[in-house]
Amino acid sequence: MNWTDERVELLRKLWAEGLSASQIAAQLGGVSRNAVIGKVHRLKLSGRGRTTAAPARQKKASSAPASRPARAASPARATAPTVGATALQVQFDAEPAARQHLRAVDNNVVVPISRRLDLTQLTERTCKWPNGDPLSEDFHFCGNEAGENGPYCAYHARLAFQPASERRRVR
DNA sequence: CCCTGATTCGC
DNA sequence: GCGAATCAGG
Image 1 (cartoon, rainbow, N blue to C red):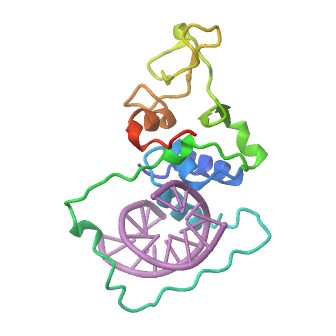
Image 2: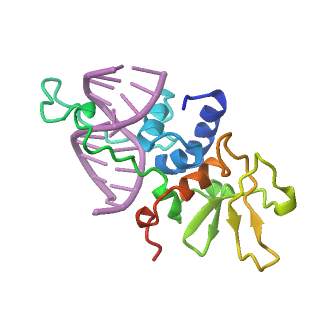
């Protein structure tokens, strides 16, 4: 996954709105929170406008790290990063602007604001993640743009393939 | 342990 | 430039 202009633009917007790096990573899809943080720094966005400057982390000793194992040196444990887990957690202290894009459900789970399409409006390129009680009038599908390879938008694809055991426990 | 952003440095 | 590993902290 590369940083297209669209993805960078979305990153800038969500970061400015106060979403955490892991939440942004989940929305973008295909990147880790580390990738988001790294990109944020390269774009020089890290300040997030806040006045109180960060404590300015100490520089690591420039000589031998020695203890850090080479990344590719341990193929035995190839666990994928659990990006997106935190997106399940509501950030009640989030900036108000952030809530424009996240809708709380059951006071605990957040989902991106969807297009709320009904069955007849779905196409091959709309997210088919269902929301709400299927028997209720409010039932709808997410309807956001789905990835070119799957039935869900990046956000819901993350949820769909996240093992239930790894989802954050909801109170 | 859950999470947050910050930094380094091999690639 | 990218991002995993790591660090420092809440």
